[in-house]
Amino acid sequence: MNPELQKYYDLDPGFAQFVESHGKVAAMPDMLKAYRRWEYDLICDKLDEERRKAEIEERLATSIAEAKAEGIAEGIVKSQMEFAIKILSTMKQGSNASEIYDMLKLLDIPDDIIEAAKKQIAVNL
Image: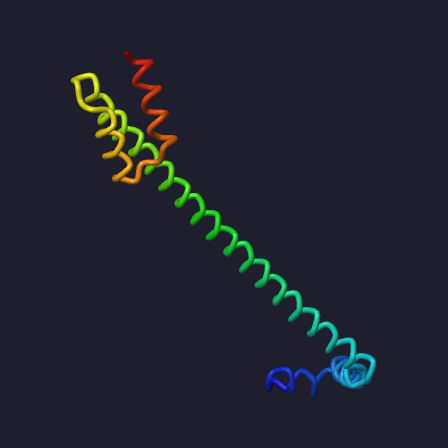
């Protein structure tokens, strides 16, 4: 016991009685069991909280990674479209259409982007 509490224990019979009664009650098997259950519940609650926090952080990281990948993919499509439009615009100057198409295919520009670029150029003419 803390030395200051020991002095108070020695001087105050009511406090001494409380400490002794508390010691008896705390030593009872049912009280020990209840206390251990309370401690166990605290540990389980803390573990659940940490698990939920980890799940949230994992979901957030996954969402960020997906958003970045989506943004990169959109940027690639946009740049391919702009490039295809610029290349197809040279057709106006008398270039061979099949050569331009072959060049775009060599650059791994998908057919749907090439077709969309053709449509956009036709609208702008």
